[in-house]
Structure formats: structure tokens, C-alpha cells
Image 1 (tube, helix red, strand yellow):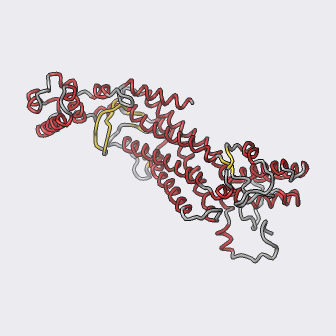
Image 2 (tube, rainbow, N blue to C red; image 1 turned 90 degrees about the vertical axis):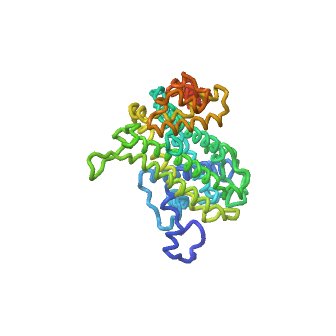
Image 3 (cartoon, rainbow, N blue to C red; image 1 turned 45 degrees about the vertical axis):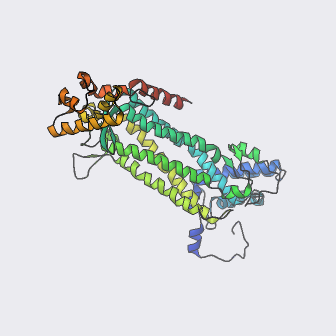
Length: 456
């Protein structure tokens, strides 16, 4: 018999039973469900609704059910719609009618919302630690190669020289923003819905603040109707996962390009690449390609779930059963990626020779314009003069440094004999000493700032 309805309940279409059941995926919530049920039993006892002996029976029974589930010895029944009914059904089999008191004042609506929040609260630290490990790996690369100069790109065209460390830190700061968003979102996640009943609250004197403290929540949901239907925390987590995936994808795309023969800026450790079944010479950046692809998966989870939510009236609806699978998959996907990519970053080797070879003088055109600006020339005028010089060098088929001073002065009289000192990529990165720039002290300040954040 089910835990709801009567013995005369009409049978249901087996196909509908399969569609309606969430047990195939929500069985994963059994640790949280049992933990929440033990806390609820204690709350009932504090409210005078369970005797000390009944509480002891229920807690011992739930612990025994948990042991069965952990050992893989738990036998699910055809009438188990979800993990909540499965646990309660087995508890009843073990301890008898007293198990029926456990659900006093509680609904599966507030129960499942509590379980899913607990699941994410437990997953949060692993995601944060994965991001931290990735930042540490990028910081280690930056510190080990602080004076390595490489081309910087906009529109995937060579733009200006910058430090390899600046490129590493650009990605590290993105992951630090992800960590910050995790910290900011946690209090909204750790808000207790238990005690809200189906929608109207519980009629019994349950101490919800004590419940929250016992389960590790930081606040109690202030409105019972909102609490059972609120899945903002799911949408917010899926957004966080999508943003992390997006940042991982951008890092991966850079490295896929940089590890190619055409760029050759980095060499990936073979532990993070695969071979070809046909071409013996190839090593494929599969870890990075999977990171790039899985970002689409994470974004899809967010988009799909927002569409589930957008038309729901207030209160609980079966549509909300669709919250768990995207959450589980997003957690698994992030943990799989964050287990691999820090190691890939730590072990990759930059190739200074290839980076130097890609530094062409045309990338220093902005330095020529800035040279004129320092001599009082308006930037727009300086820009036009240098554009003409770049075109002149291209027509002659020579680098900018090969143009005679007389040609420079034809385009602007403010050019002087010291102009060749400008055409130095190392000098170019050192001139950018403002906060966030590429000068050595500015990059060292970034490293220090990031280390301080990680230490907090």
C-alpha cells in the first residue's frame, strides 16, 4: 500500500507510474533525507509529539535504514514513488506503526526542498575547492614565468605584447569571481524550508530555528507558501555552474589554440591528452575539448530549468520534480572538470621561443602613438600618423624599425632619434604600470592580491 490514499485506490497506468516516479534519480538524496528526518523527529519530540522512547525508536530505525542504503542492501518496492516514501516504508517495516508519527506536520513538499538544499550545501565546498585549486595552478604558472612576454590578442588578431603571467591571471580572476558568487549565494541556499508543510505551515509548535541550527542552515524561510515552491536556489546554482563552465570553456579554447602547431605557445602534459587511432603523430587536447563542450551542457540545464519555472503559479507543482536531474548532473560535471583542469594547468609548459617569434613590431604601433602623446600630440592625430607609418612599412615589406627617421618625421615632426627605443616589447609591457596593467610591479601586485583573497 502507498503512503497516501486508501486501499481501494484505483490502479494506475504502468507507463504513467514510470513517468511520475522520481525514485530512479532522487534516491541519490537518501543521506539528506534521513538526516532531515532525524532532525524532524527530534523537533517533534521537543514539541511533545513524540515520547523519548518513540524518538529513540525512530532515530535507531532511520540509522538502520541508512546503513542498508549505504551497504546496497536496501530493496526498493514497486510502490516506492520517491526516496521519501521508500525510506518511510522501510522504516515502518522495521519499527512498526510508530514510524507513522514521523510525518506529523510535514509534507513531501517541504521535505524535498530541504533535502535538495542540503545536497547542494554539501556539494558547495567541493566546487569552491576545485576553483581554488585552479586559481592556485594559474598563480603558480604566473609566478614561475613572470618575465615571459607573449602576444596578446583581440578579435584573435595580434594586438599588443603582454606578460604570460597577465594571461594566466586574467583567467584566475574570472574563477575568483566564481568563488565570490558562490560565497554570496550560500546564505540564500542555506535557508530552511522544513516546517512549512504542504504550503500553509505546520500547526504544531515546531522550533524551526533549532531545526535550522541542527541541520546547518543559516536562516529559516519566512513564508511557508514561498518556501515549498521556491527553486531560486536551484536556478542560481545552475547559473553559477553555467558561468563556471563558460569560464572553463574560454580557458580551454585559449589553450587548445596555444597548444596547436600553428601557435605552439604551450605544451600540454601527455597525461591530459590522447592519441589518434589512425595518425601516430597526433596528441589531442581532449580534456580541454570536453571542458569546452560541457559548458554547453551546463548552460542548457540553466535555460531548461528557467523555462520550467517561468509559468508556475504559487505553491508546489509536480513540474518542480524537474529540479533534481539538472542539479545532480551540474554538480557531477563541475566536479569532473575541476578534478582534471588544475593538474593540466600545473603541468603545462610554456614555450618562450614560440612566444618570442610571434612578437612582431606591428604590435608596438600603439607604443609609437603613445610616444607622440608624451610629446604633446593629441592621441587621434598620433593614431593617424602611426597608421600611415604602419602602411608605409607594409608597402616596403620591412619592419617599423627599418624605416629611416626621415620617414617618421614626414608623418609627424615630433618623432626623434630615440624612436627605436619604443620598438621593444619588454619596454612596452613595463610602461603599463597602472593597477591591473602588464608592468612587472603591477602583475606582482595582482598575484599578491589574489593570494590574499585565497588566504581569507
